[in-house]
Image (cartoon, rainbow, N blue to C red; front, side, top):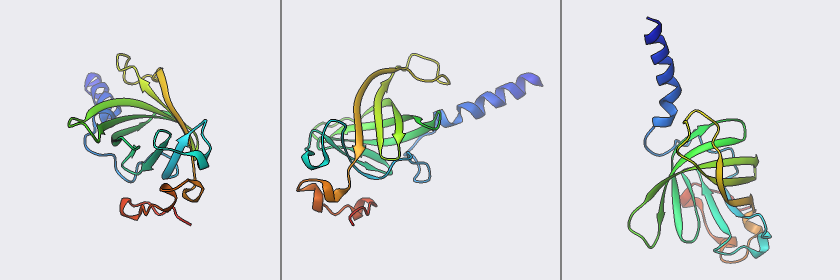
Length: 158
């Protein structure tokens, strides 16, 4: 009987890790939706190379989009996210496991996760590949300043 209870407890712990399909709108990352610019770039100097758009269902830039497949909260600041990323020029999407380290509601670090470690442990960063902060749309240069994002479910214009 104790073995059955332990097995049930283990399955409950693992359930969020095996969820399939897009992350639900009820469980987004605790970040302001909208534009994020690389940490070393002022909002007014944003470019295709430094700008990402965070939506409830994923994040993307000028060349690719990563759809959130699952989001697992590890702590108040750390989220383990499985993403399906597709380059707009390529045909095949690739899955990746990343860690979103939330600095505050308007800034984060994004790093690759070593998938060889146990799934219930805190992931080790193998590479921080993006650190960004939120930019109000009105502070961005053209063409982003006047983009209508309402079709994406984002209403961030003043």
